[in-house]
Amino acid sequence: MNAACIVSSDRDPAPPPSILVVEDEVLIRSVVGMYLRDCGFQVIEAGTADEAIRVLESGLAVDLVFSDINMPGSLDGYGLAQWLRHERPSLHVILTSGSPQRTDELGKHRPLLAKPYDHAELERLIRAMLSE
Image (cartoon, rainbow, N blue to C red; front, side):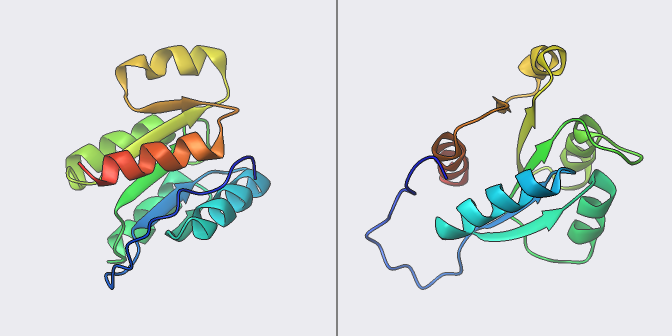
């Protein structure tokens, strides 16, 4: 991990926010998931947009989706974001890509993080979005 998590002094009895991490690269998904768990989030992992939709349709509570753009399956990250805006409009979404041309396209899909991203920056962005 590349930075320490933001630690809250509040001991809120509410369940921790739930983050759905959608990334086809298992190692990246595992490392991000582990970091976010260490920061106090509940993390659900999915390898494709199709799998993420199945998770969401299962009724699991999710507060935010963090998704890669370039993924195999019937939808990429853009398709997942569009599905979320239509089916779950109140759900927060953060997109990421390691491809420079895809990152340029992300300009119209805010917020975004270009890979490689700093885990602490991801955490700050998640906390800011969840506090809105």
